[in-house]
Each structure stands twice: as C-alpha cells, then as structure tokens.
Image 1 (cartoon, rainbow, N blue to C red):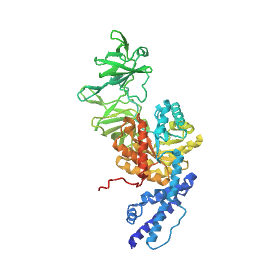
Image 2: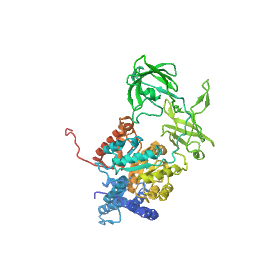
Image 3: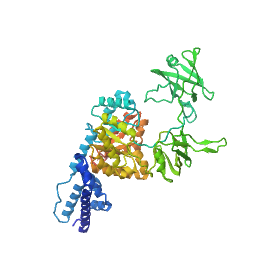
Amino acid sequence: MLFETEKLEEIRIQIDLILEKILEYENRYKNQILGVHPNYTESAKNLIHYLALRSFDNAVFQDKLSKIGLPNTSSSESSVLHNLLVYKTIINHLLNNHKTEKTSGFLTKSESKKLIKKHVNALFGKIDRNRNTRILVTQPTLASEDKDFAKNLTALGMDAARINCAHDSEPVWSKIIANTKQANPTCKIFMDLGGPKLRTGKMKPGYKVIHIKPKRNTLGQVIVPAKVWLAPFGMLPPENAEVDAIIPVNKKWLQKTRKGSYVTFLDSRGKKCKITIESKEGYGRWASCSDSAFVTTGTQLTVFLEKKSTSEIHTVHEILPLEEVIFLFEGDTLKLNKAPILGEPTKYDEAGNLIEYPHISCTLPQLFSEVKKGELIYFDDGKIEGIIKEVASDFLLVKITNAKKNGSKLKADKGINLPNSDLGINGLTEKDKEDLKFVAKNADAVNFSFVNSKNDVEDLLNEFKKLNADLSIVLKIETKKAFRNLPSILLKAMENYPIGVMIARGDLAIETGWKNFAVIQEEIIHICEAAHIPDIWATQVLENLAKKGIPTRAEITDAAMSQRVSCAMLNKGIYIEKAVKMLDKILCKMQSIQNKKMAVLPKLEFSKEL
C-alpha cells in the first residue's frame, strides 16, 4: 500500500472532528446566518465553517495532508466544507472504502469564485481592464478644480475614487464627485468618515518669519537657487507646484514687474539679499534667490522694475506665524494636557536648566480616565514611541523611548495611538453623522473608520435607516479590538449589501505591534476570503512614487503583493498619475503568474545552457 493505513485513519478522524465542529457551529450561530442579506447566506455559512476549522490547531493536520499529496487547507477558505468532503472521499478510497461523501448542500470551489466575483462587482462595479484587482485613488483638493484630473487617472487605471471627509468641505466634495462622474459615469465614489481619531492639539504660534533656503553642496556653494512665490496675501501657487518660500506683497507694484526685475532687502539679521523675477503666473510672480534669508512682516523692499536707476520702496505684507514644533529625543519627557492648552517646546533658563517640559494637548480628553501607567503610546503614525510614566487627572507624563537620533518633530494634528488601552470610543462621532447625510445622497460607499465591534456596525445601520440610505459599507480595520471582533463585525455588516473590508495598515500596525502586524494582515485576508468579502490593501501603497516621483524597491514588492486582494488603494501625491500607471502595470504583470494566493505557472523562458 502506498500510504500507511494508520496515517490515513488519523487524517480521517481529524476530518470527522472538524465536520462535527462545523455542524456544532452552524447550530450555535444559526441566528447570525439567518440575519444576513440573502446574497450573503452561503457566504455567512462558509465563514462559520472556516471559524470551526480554525478552532483547531491545524498545523499537524496540514502536514499530514501534504505528505499524501493533498493541497493545504490554507488555500481552501472560500469553500471549506466542500474541500473537507473531497479530502474525506479521497481518504475513504485510499482505505479501500469506496464511499463518496455527500455531493450537495455546500459551495464548490467554482461556485465560491462566482460569489466572490459577484460581491466584488457589486462593491466596485464591473471592470473593463486586463486585471482583477481594482485601484482606488484618494482625491486631493485639486480634483475639484481640474476637470481633467479624474479623466487622466481613469485613463491610466483608476477604478474608484476615495474622498476623505476629514479634509475639505461639502462644496469641494461635490465638485470632486461631479468631475469624476463626468470623466467616468460608472466610477464608484467611496467616502471616509473621519471617526474618533485621537490627535495632538494645536501648537502655540511661532515667529512670523519666512526662511529662504537655496540648495547647497557639501562645500556650502549654491547649486539650486530657492524658488520663491511673490503674490498678494492669500494667493497661493498652483497646488502641484514646487515652492521653497511664499512672500505676500502688494499687487499693484508686483504687476509692474517683468522677467529680470529684482528686489533687494536687508533680512532680519541685517544681511543684504536679492530676489530676481523669473516669470509671471496670474497675479503672482515666480522668482529665484541664491541667498539664505530670513524675511519678516514689514521687511523693507527696494524694487528695481526695469533699470537700476528706477526703483520703488515697498514692504512685505503680513506673514503668517510659523507652526511651532516640539523636538523630542529618546529619554525626554513630554506632558500631554487634558485641557486644550496650546502646545510649546521645552523651556530652559539662561543657564540651560529645564524650566518646563514640552507640552501639547489631545483631541479626546476622555482618554485620561482610561489609560494606565506603563502603557505604550505612539505619536505621528508610530514615528515617536513612548511609555506613560505618570497619570494625573489633567495631564499625562510620557517618557520618550524611541525617536530619531537628531530628534523627532511633533506637530499639531498628528495621530496618537494607545495600543494597550481600551478607550471605549464609539465608531461614530457627531461629525460623522452630519457627514453621513451628504455621503448618503452623493456617494456609492461609506468607509467606516475605527469600527471596533458589531455594536458600532449596528449604530451605522441605524443611521442608514434614519436617512433611508442605500450605501455600500467598507469596514476599516485599524485596531486590535476590531481584528479580534472581525467575524462578528462581518456578520452584522452582512445584513447590508454589499460590504467590503479595508486593511488600514497604518494604524493597525501600530495598534497590533510591528512584530504581529504581518501575521494579522494575512489573517484578515484569510477571513475575508472565507466570507467572500472584497478586501482593500491600504496605506503607503507606492507612497514614495506618489509623493517624490521615484519608487523604492520595497514598495514595488508591496504593490505586487496587493494583487492577492480585491483592491489596492493609493493616497494623494503630486506624482499620483505615475503611481496609478505603475500600479496598473504591476497588477497586470503579477496576474500572469499568480491568481490571488495560488501560483500560476506560464511557460518559463530560460537559458537551455544549464
């Protein structure tokens, strides 16, 4: 006999145990299965079957299957019962028991594929491209002003557009949607609710000064002059333009300047400096400056319009204060205030002795009654790490345990994560409820931020009823609690049709811990596959390419891995068109060698000279 009878019996017994557990789970969660939308009935059953399978430690079972040439159970999430019965039928025949297990009452592999495709199309719309993975692109403010923006992105590969309600306003959102629909009427609109995001509060305004800083080489020689925008107060340069300094000046004299006109002035240090006009754009002027200069409100300008003998005297208009910054080093102490006190850097006396810790407030004062001494705290997407060393009624003292060698900058409106703390924050804020009124009328799907439990989903569904909303739901999984509750969150959300899951990898990585995140990311993909729910690969996909124009090797690999899910999401950046084009090519190439997690083996071209 090719295989030992004893080994085959062990496999058969394990399969029977799993089948018993599946029946037990079906009975236990019968109400949850009956409660989902009719389009999800079979998917909900399969999710329950998968949870029954995963209630066992299957490592040894998987090893035994592989030794007799049967595929690994990890690739059978979408049709769990069918695969187990196929395994059992094969084992029966190898044991000379020619009994065939039941052949109906479960999803086959092909049927589950059709269901997944149906749910993906319902969420994102049908795709008319040579790839299966969709591309979702976050829209900048520019998309409301430039009608060709969405048209260009659609041509390059964008399948759906994302608008974040945490930014801009309803008039801007309306223009973005109108421009997108004009470019492609079938393009789905996804809108993020801001959610109860914990952030740093406002900082005390700094000095009203502009630092003009040309690029220099290692010898201190200027290699690229600073690019300066001169314009009336409040008139900003085009959104995608690169600029080193913006100086507000009077419109009347500026209109008289032309290429070659120049301005001389003494900066705040008494240093003589010069700015030369290079070109005009509307009421503004582009200029260059090869001097390092500090310009303040009221700085006197000597303006030479044409000839050196023809000059006028003017001044710099009101300059906005610089945003104050707190520099933090490993070992520093940061004070986090409960009251909305404006943040300030560390204060020292003339002898260099510490007078006052650097301090900043936060946007959710309720955390002060929930956190405990010794718990971890992260700032600015994990760039600064700390541990809470003292908890008072109106402040926390945080010891910084990890920061850049030369100091990390902490500014206003930066994210705060407390992965060990249960803050009891609800998934819907009052602002979310207001924004949802707009979303319900204008969008196709709502991205639900910081969902932590099925109760949060219940709250969202209740808001749907109040608004009579017919919306798709995308559940943003970005906390440890959300991951633990994912099956119950999905089953509750499946009362609505369709739904999806966004793997919000930024916050999720911090909340779950760097060493755990890779495993958790994979587990979410497995669970979504079992529930036949579309999943979205989000956060920092081709981030360097979108923002700087050049991709890193690591992010190319990351983008290639996104082919395993239903959709990859790109964030904003001045090179977003390049990012969309690159992602489209990567996904198409990857699809030729991999179908989700399954390797595809096309003909391999290789040298025959081995």
